[in-house]
Image (cartoon, one colour):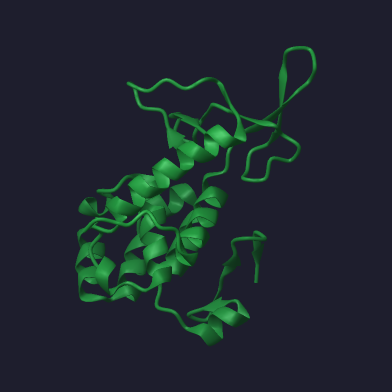
Length: 196
């Protein structure tokens, strides 16, 4: 399956969710040749450039969550335009890989966004190490697939991102989502970072 590089509303939402989860290290010049960190999130907080940074596991990262591979070279500072260009390339690469995730064809647009987010976070073949997720997703049992995500080291490592991705993976219940609940439990509004 080849993913068409035509942005639809679901792509725009997925991109916003991923940028929100990946964050970035924004900096602003102090005027004396040094740079001060203004924000470590998607919001620049007055920053004008994005600085290369080590992620939570120590891997050098640039822009919005792009892990710098051994054969890649990036400057220590990027403009927002350069970071966005790199993000767009990464998004489409990861969406293509996510389209091969078990259950993709049975997934709703929300569940597909979860799969794209997982591919962006862990690589396109992440599901190969998750046999119970794979079995559940192939059957279209996204409640069980979501439960398999919760029962993992990944869930503990990425914290807020995990809560958001799991809620996207679960079957939709519009009346509960509108009230801020999923399966009777509290969910987060990922755009305002508030808990309901």
